[in-house]
Image 1: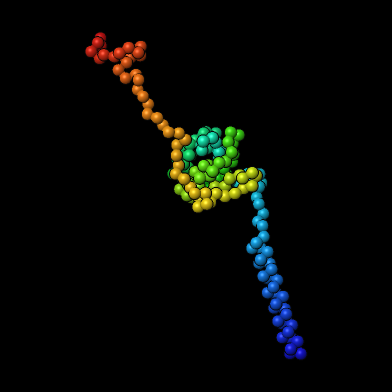
Image 2: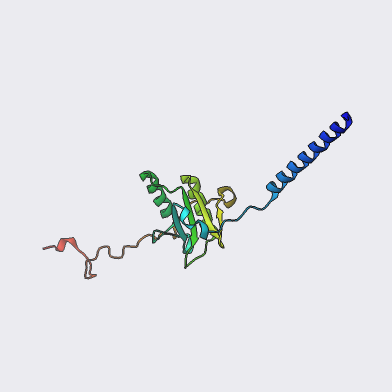
Length: 164
């Protein structure tokens, strides 16, 4: 009898241990349910769209990456910085690597969480994997050449000594 109860306890423990290992293994390596962007549309504090040449469409205005960063700096100063942001593609451009890198930089700078729409699947930008890049203006600004120097409105030479 004593042997039977020891054998029964050992078998019960082995089954219990095996079952818990099986359940833990299934939950560890099982697939995570993917979240679609459409189901989470209203859950974000702000939504911005990717635009051409690394620009963003924020509240209907086309902004460079630097201007978008300045916009978020202003919101942070006002105490209205969004905690979660959704980056979507616009009608003119899809989400490019450059957009993700700029948003990763803003995520590091301002401490917000940025998600993007990857063909209907919602993904979070990881700044380490995305390799955040320095914010830039959308184009180089050329120095303005002043051809009107020493000329008046009629494009004739200007001589201050011939004043009335």
